[in-house]
Length: 419
Image (cartoon, rainbow, N blue to C red; front, side, top):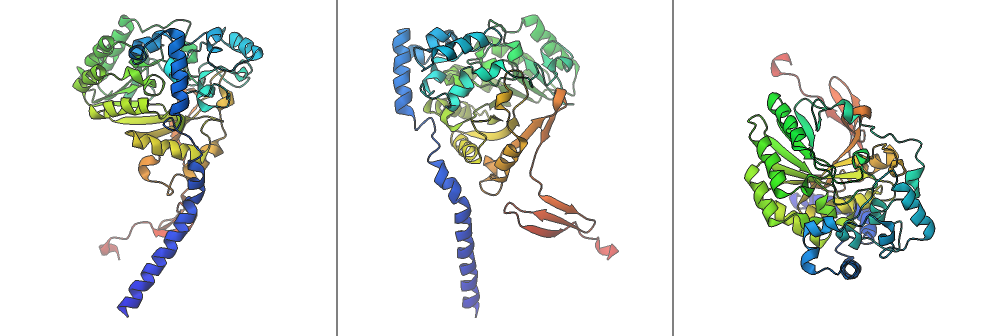
C-alpha cells in the first residue's frame, strides 16, 4: 500500500514536471535566437581590426582606456567610414549635434552591426531623426535642480544622496537622462564644488549611503577618484559608497587592476552598471566584471526599458541570465524617463509588467530585478509589480501565484488564549 502511494506521488511529480517544461518552452525556443556579445566575436574582431587600421593603433593602445576616451567617434564624417549611413542620415546627425552631443568609444563601435540601424547597440549609440521631433519630453523631468541642496548634490531620500562629479562619459547614450548637462566639452566638477558637496554630507549625519555618479565617475583619473572616495570614506556616518558607471559596458578597458586595487582600500564599495541588451555582454565585459568581483566589489545592473531594444520578455530574461554569468546581479529595470529627445524609447507600462510576469516563477529570484517608474519631478522610485494580492480580509487573504492560480491563505492565527 505504501509502495502504491509513493508511486502515485512520483507520477504526479512527473506530470507536474511535464507542465513546467511546457511553460518554459517558448523561452527555450526564443533564447538561442537572441545573440550575445560572445556569439558575435567574429564580426566584432573584424570591426576592431578596421578601427585599429584607421587610427594606425596597436593592440596595446586598444586596451588602454585613455586611448579609448581620446579616440571616441563624435564626427559623422568619421562615423561613415565604419557604418552604413546615407547622406540623408548624415544631415540628420549633423542637425541633432547642434543640440545634443554624441560620441562612441571605439570599443562600443566594434560591437555594433554596421549595416543595421535596428541593432540595439546602434540604437543606443547613433543619433536618429526621432530626437529632432519630440513634443513630449522635458529637459529635466526629474527636477534635479530643485533637489540640489548643495553643489553637485541630488537628494530625494532621507538617508542617501547622489554626488555628480563629471559630465564626461565613455559614450553619450541616446537615451541619457542628463543630456542637458553634457555640454560641448568634457568637464570634471570643480574641486571646490566637490568639497562643498562633501562638506554637506559631513554636516548631515543621517546620510549613510552616497552614490557617486555623473556623467561617469570612472572617466576620472584614479587619483582624482580616490581623492573623492577617500574624503567620503573619512566621514564616520557614511556606511556605503556606490559608483554608477557604464564603462563596464561601453569601455571595459577602464577597469584596470590599478583601479581595482585602489577601490579595494575603501570597502564597502558597490558598483551599479547599465547593460541593456545581451549583445553588450562580451569577453571584454567579463574581464572587467571578473576583475571587480575578485576585488570584492558587488555589481548590480540598472537596465533601462527601451522600445525596440529590450522591451521583450525573452530578451530581458536572456540579459539577466547572461549578467549573472558575469557576476552582475540584475537590480533595477527603469522605465525610461521622458527626457527631451528620447521619448521614442519610452514603452507602455504594460511592457514592463509583462516582463515581470514572465520572470517571476519562470526563473530564479536572482535573475529578477525591480521594475521601477520614477515619479515625476523627483518624487522617488516607485516599484511597479503585477497584482499578486487579490483580496485582503481580516482572517484570510486571496493570493495569485506566478501561474495565475488563486489560493486562500490565512491572515495569521488567533493567540491561543483568545481561542
